[in-house]
Image (tube, rainbow, N blue to C red; front, side):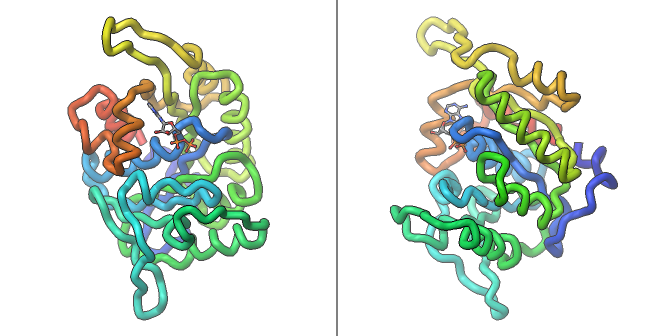
Length: 260
Ligand code: ADP
């Protein structure tokens, strides 16, 4: 998909970084960060790319926990932050710059200046792709990231639930307005398979994200099931594509990475 959209996007603004892709959702809690983490690791591991992961979710940074990377980053001679690496992915997060349990109660200008620091003040070196875990929604922060980073493309994450899909549409329309190509839609928590009897339950509805992708003329990139392993491995700081590489859910993430 990135090869297909090249030429439509203006091209990323960070020196040495070939492509910047946003992982976005209209709504919080749909699994955007989990998807960003597993996609970034799958792009590094399965697609053998040099990958960075930027946690721009200013109000709820979860990359430090999910990727087990902590502490204040070291600085280069010209005061740029050096992103720590884990699982083959270089990571940077607003969470590195604030105390762990401190509430992030910032007004707009402070959010913007923190984002500016994250967008400009990191020594990424040479990367094939930088994955950006966006803040949820379609406000100033999202617009500013989309425009200032000159994204190559965006991936939209949604559950199949109507209330999430309505916001996912808003997100998609925002990217269209600022002329960021949409690489496709990922349906997270698409179904739950009972570990005892094997019955499939469609807790958040069935097929909603695929339908929305069709209606809005977007690519459908795949379904990620609701699985205990995905949650526990994230909480333990070892993404499921690393902790259970041969599982069906890891294969689903790897397929999404290959499509992107
Ligand atoms: P968001 O970034 O959209 O707010 P998160 O990625 O933080 O969402 O996910 C919200 C919660 O749901 C987390 O506890 C995460 O571990 C869990 N989660 C996300 N995707 C899945 C999944 N496919 N299966 C099980 N739990 C999931």
